[in-house]
Image (cartoon, rainbow, N blue to C red):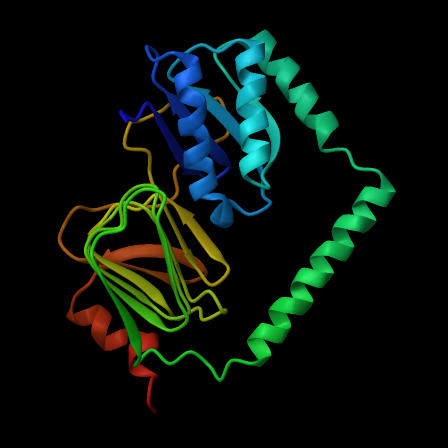
Length: 267
């Protein structure tokens, strides 16, 4: 199936780019697929949604929001479109939807506490993530596919746009990374993500999140949205936390000599 839908994350929200010539009914299944594949990484964030590439009417925008609500736990605070009047209506509707009664708030808090208790129980059973051990996956991961590893992870292939990989340790992609990668998922801030060709949709390390630059430049000066991760097509690269931010840098001798994740193991 020809792809007519792309989603790009930026610091303050998500850009949903739609093919201007494709029938709208053909776009909805692809919108659902894109958001469902990235749902675990988007989490329950409050975001601004920008619909780009084509004009949409109120009914079409409503269907898009329904799909996002069904496939993710995102909370849409505002919607940006080319139609200012429509944008105001959608923003008003989104604001009403985000208003919760006290009973609903208590219910959500109870659910989060239960989820946290299960996570603490799982973490208590772990003996720790040792970066000297790694799983190896042979082959590329296509859109919609995911792979999880408790230790570090080596992918002998590509992680394509729409695919997701997560690991308790670091991630090594011996190929091109254009999908979503999450390293140090149990809280290891020294973990990193390496790829021979680094162009990810999204990278998460421990509790830090970075979103890739838009490949098709968009003027966000009027929306408050901005790009957050520098991409340099210059050989193998690595993403790691530096001074509290995820930074992409060359995967070279200097990195290997100073990498805490690699050098602290086995001491």
